[in-house]
Image (cartoon, rainbow, N blue to C red):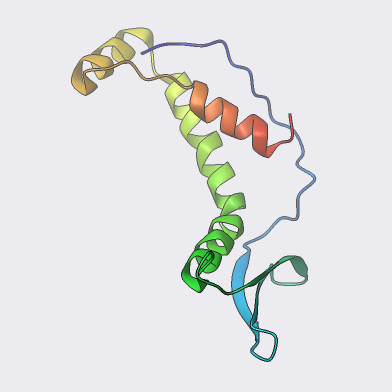
Length: 118
């Protein structure tokens, strides 16, 4: 398992906490499709696009679902990174043998840093 020195640290995030959800909004007169990203108390953001052949509604909804899942994905990445970094070196080598490749935590670290705006 490729080991990197820990580059992330616990920081207080400035994003809106809570579970986010994506909900559809339509303006059929203008062929406008909007996706609202909300938590339990307030609107987080709105994606607005014209539903068209270039950007069908299912793709707009998939993008909104991905954005709405961001807080949980960040938490999962931080958890996974912590687990991987806590594996003793002798077990890391065994895991690499089982997987037939080393585990590089760099992708997880990069995603966390991007989410934190670093």
